[in-house]
Image (tube, rainbow, N blue to C red; front, side, top):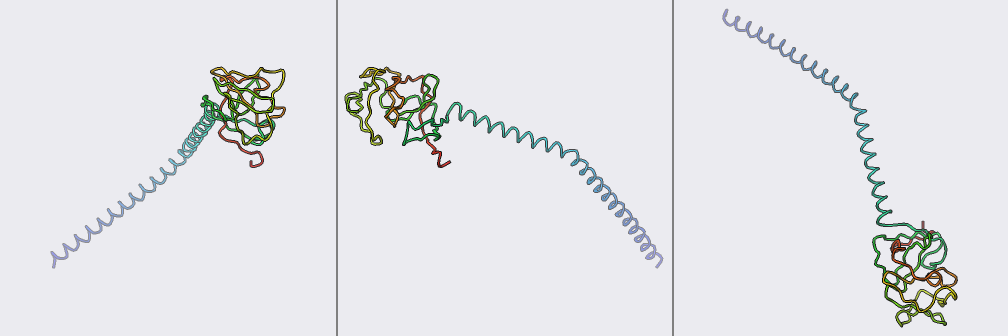
Amino acid sequence: MGETELKNTEGVEKGTELTEETKEEKDVNVMVKDDSQEETVVFKKHTTPVRKLRYARAFVMELFCVVLIVYVFFNFIFGIFVAPNDDMYPVAASGDLMMYYRLDREVLSKDIIVFNYDGVMRTARVVGRGGDTVDITDDGSVIVNGNTIIETNIHTATYRYEGYIDYPVKLGEDECFVLCEARNGTEDSRYFGPVHKSMIKGTTILILRRNSL
């Protein structure tokens, strides 16, 4: 009996000690958890401005990249030209947006090009290229290399402008002969002569109607 009571007493005492130790450990854990929470809160308070600064920097970098891409896109690869009048009607009317490709300097017949002549941006259709011979007859026909060109989208005759250039016109290697779609009174190669390659800004690839914007 005495030994049994002694063992029980020791067990109780040990159990009591374990309980106290466990309690202390729990208290320590709670304290550590509380300290961690406090540290986390303090850390968050200190890092919130840093995160905002990082977000701001990321936003500025993304915005800079977008602006740079748009700048390169529209200053070195593509361009936008607003039709100033109805010289290219019905293909393009006054106010229509014409997007042109800057890197395509090898123009073809029937291409609509944007070019700078005497400091004025213009647009017209190519009917003759380097090496071609262009003539305009008295009855309003356009002759290229001895062949009458068929223009299904032109419904009026094409007449010469007397007193400006001499016909037939033999184009140089880097020249092209251009005509506007509206053939009465418009300023094109009948007025100022062939367009040199160095004047060409690009070839039109897209036309956005003003009424559809």
